[in-house]
Length: 289
Image (cartoon, rainbow, N blue to C red):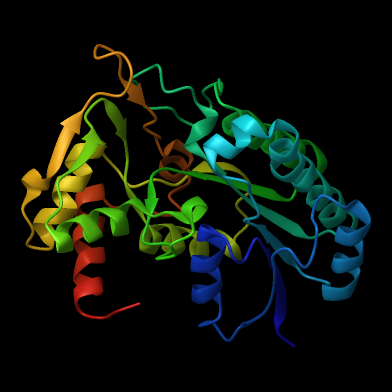
């Protein structure tokens, strides 16, 4: 009998990528839901748990548009925090593992130093605050949890939905059209490919690893450097990416994640961001998935 996995938020960017990968593995029976199961409704969540009987629940459901979250604070917390709480309660009742995807936005970005799993989060956006609240519920309510924070994910979705934009494909479209576009030079982070995130995910899926893990590619760059690298690898003019400052010209927004737990446990080794990007581009050019 195949092990059952319930994936929530399967139509979102991370959920779509993981669903495509999970379906290639015949060892698992995958149940995917999006709006058909309202995770903010505890009764609906408990009914789904009783029906699907998963050994692992993967929570990718999220309200991730920062502008939307700022304007709809209650809805942001309802999905990102209350939804995570309900899943934690339901999975604990069935002794199931909960894998919860979070974000580097739980950090404010005002410090250049890379943040590890033991640094205190200080979110300064509603999105980051609601995601941190979700983390706290998961941590407090189900001991069999794995919280994964990543950074600047790309290669997840080609959707034209404004809430599911992918920086990689946006840059690629500008390159194809020969369009000049503006990119921040004072925003720093670590581009992380869907391929690398998936590899780490499968390494920990059936493992005895629990707790909080950062899973971002190694190294860091500015948004403009990332855009230029994408253009160059595809043979387009990197100068199409014009650098601009966001906010105060002297300020830097930095959300670099240090994968300290990965390094301590030895469970995986994330690639440098530029190597992972080259691999991703080579796959795209070759028609790989």
